[in-house]
Figure 1 (spheres, rainbow over the protein chains, first blue to last red):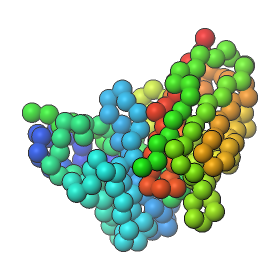
Figure 2 (tube, rainbow over the protein chains, first blue to last red; figure 1 turned 120 degrees about the horizontal axis):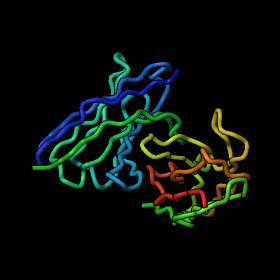
Figure 3 (spheres, rainbow over the protein chains, first blue to last red; figure 1 turned 90 degrees about the horizontal axis):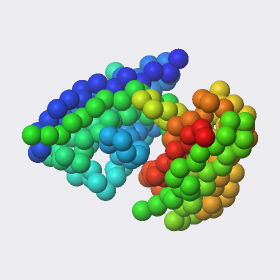
Length: 116
Length: 111
């Protein structure tokens, strides 16, 4: 069974940093692109970032470019999102998702709250 | 950036009746590899989204056959042939042809 388990969310002050993680199991992690998608409270889904299976190609939404960095450790079957210079508008549940041209499986999400 | 516009944004439906949602893209979603990476997802309250349809018209594993997708280029439709109570929630179209974009979401509720 495919499992994606996010962790590392929490409360952080504006301008602060946080790294969230996603532990993957139940499939061959190295075969899949991975994405981060976020959802602000009572709002819709927003694509954030993606990384190829080797970790050599990354892409970002304009709203996070230059502040967020996606990475993966294929030896640990883990996906990461390093978030710097956080803003109030980054407050959201962050979902880890598996897939290339479509997002096949989703974790339960981890809540990141940016507030003073 | 590609913008996806869904209509309607809210859809009250009667159990057992059909429903459809439209998704229009600001640009063609045909990728250089020939595929069209338009998918549909469903999100129930308090739950993560789940994939229903990928590459326009392909049902994902375990998705009931009352769900179908169609379209090409810039115009796409999700149809539910007979709405069941478990179908309530928000439906999103999503494109992955150029980075990623979601539509605004369509809330389906029972009349």
